Amino acid sequence: MIIPQAVSFAEALRMGSETYHVLKDIIAERYGKSAINIGDEGGFAPPIATAEEALDLLKEAIKKAGYSGKINIAMDAAASEFYVKGSYVLSKEKGREKKLSADELLKYYLSLVKKYPLTSLEDPFHQEDFQSFAKLKKQSKIQIVGDDLTVTSPERIKKAIRQESVNCLLLKVNQIGTLTEALEAAKLAYQAGWKVMVSHRGGETSDDFIADLAVALGCGMIKAGAPCRGERVVKYNRLLKIEEEMKAVKNH
Image 1 (cartoon, rainbow, N blue to C red):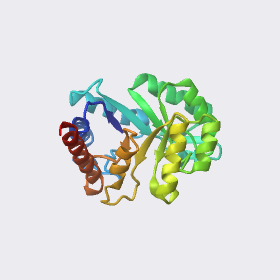
Image 2: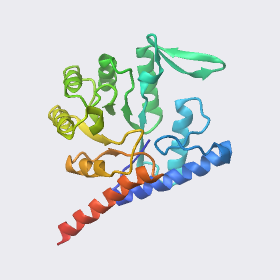
Image 3: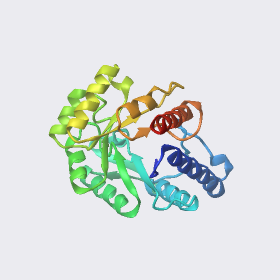
Image 4: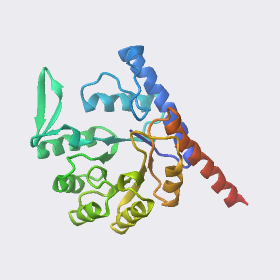
């Protein structure tokens, strides 16, 4: 994922959209037009094997779009998906699976942070490994986000607070079930000094409520997918409208 740094939401969205289209051209040139596959959340899914390949593509797109130093990178590792019998199984290299322990994976993440403008990392370890989350948070200065770890659950958030596992909550209203519980989760996170990132879901609809929620909570962050397809774009359009309305009130 990319994180545009701008003085307004409109400018950030423009930067993100331009970089997205540059990335499309890079993928088409490198892998062929048939590789322009769109994933569940609107992102591209080229035939790559490692995290470095994805990060290199993003880095190149950011540079070609003219936004080096103005756009950072975020990653959702979703590590529970490749945690198998006590090891983290990465993609096959030279025909063999690469298995890492939690400590080896931690070192790998730290090497990526050194090499790339990676400033936010979500679910770097499996959802019950609160301790490894805490180790990474302690050894890096980046944002460590809890999603599968916390599942917008006040009880799991309290556990993550006690163990100092993360410093940002991914907030999904329908993950916990009610808006009341989601607001309680956000309150707990803020009280702990965390940041909050309001998030869409994989099977998203064209409802734009989470845009209003992100502004109402004052979190300054939203995870809504690529600027592609109606169910993602509708959130960005709503944020543009809110920004326009807020400017009008301010100038009134």
